[in-house]
Length: 200
Length: 200
DNA sequence: CCACTACTGGACGGCGTGGTACAGTTTGTG
DNA sequence: CACAAACTGTACCACGCCGTCCAGTAGTGG
Image (cartoon, rainbow over all chains, first blue to last red; front, side):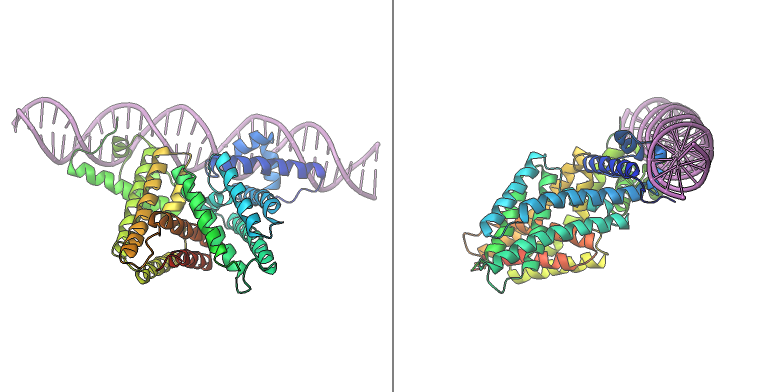
């Protein structure tokens, strides 16, 4: 029965495995990456792996969770302090630029989510939690805009955040398939137009 | 060297394989479905398969193309004749209802696209073509609305269609991860609001 | 009817996979 | 410092995978 690490050394080992797995899963896909490859990249042996994980699926779930935490940490930096429309526009433009710079590999959460949903419940929940956190960041920014009077009082930050996130997510999906940033730009612009419609 | 079938019998065999592959890929994922499983489902042997396909990847591309054609055919029925806002609303509501009825397995094109992009160029192009066709259907409906005077002359059907498709696609991605239709509904409603903003 | 091509079915092989077993080494603790 | 628990490395196994091969069966044009 595998369990949580009980020593610092163990924790470091487990974490190294998860880190490498998250990287490889993101760039090659989960199904297309073998446990052996992950272990080789992490410089770990089978014994370590099955000491901490019950098997492949548990690793996938952990890696998805780790990836989401990374992404959310980055987004928190960009969105956490936003409280104006101009700030939101800038943050999203920066996000789109980063997406383009990495070669449009699809949404880091969305791609994993699509691969995992319906085949690994634990991982699906991790991805959903990632989306939730992202949406909360957007909702927080919108709420601050509303409180500062930039948005009308009747605006609903939660709904707007969902719609905005869907636009971003869908835009990335289209851009990934088309290998063309235009779709994401149009989608983000449309999402922002929605927000502007509620401006005071 | 595999090639196109030259007899009716051959064409039927090839098509049976592609059909079953499209079904299995859609419900289990491409990477998680073996060629042997597809062939067993199609009642075909290895000889037939390698007579028509160079290998796994070519089958994947063909199956993605087939799936897209199916989906687009269905959407053409729903959107082909739409020329009013009410009609568009109804078509999208019907689409959402269908999505819910099938258990929210993600967008039939989007899920495959995410799995295939970056690993199978031919299949990625097929998925992109599917998105293009879908977007054209939306753009056509919007253009008809504009010509009927329901949308202002300055409205840009192509841009609006991209934004609307992104909302739908992103909404499906969120709903799939969350197993909750609410996200898709909010996203679609927001997309429609964008369109209404251009109403005369 | 013949010869030639298209098509079919399945047996087979090499390989990579996820997972197990187990012996050896650290590490923390009393 | 003893000793148990945590941890690590690797050899190994059974299985399923993709793709090859080939012998046989339609089907078709001359």
